[in-house]
Image: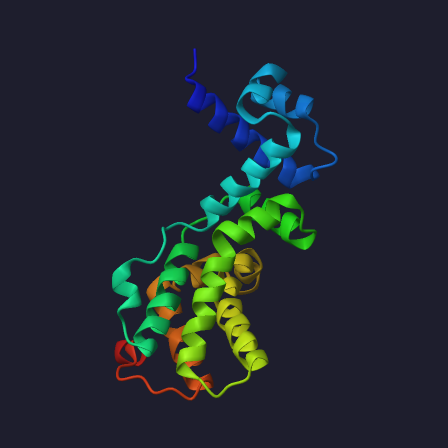
Length: 212
């Protein structure tokens, strides 16, 4: 007999696949039970109802696509420019790990039409990182207005997200082999260089140029 934790994880994995493929409304608890080969009592025991199962599936999808833990105290002790570079490198590293297609599909579904699960993901994971980035940019550009600070933050995250969310299409355009040449370190070097230049900041060392 499977351990309760194994059963719970298995149900979440199956739910993630079905919710990603068909959406919340078109996926029933019975569909999930049939695919997972468990009874409805197992779902009720571990999650209570369909909504809570869905929330856990979205949280699981997010954790699968964004590895890593919170920034430690040593990060906060860095100078502002070093902190911005460290932030970019850390987020690139977290997003460079391979992600299950169903995890990305479910997250894109949920973010396109935010529900309760999105609010939880934002509050627990995304908002703290966004506020951290905003505070770093504000410290580097104290005279910039709030709208400029906001757009700079979006531009930084947008660059990073491109390599995660558009990877399948980029492989169709340029080939998988060509995209695989772009390591996490190379991508981070480029984004740091590009961001610093856009913000009018100077770097003491440009790693990507040193490699060429």
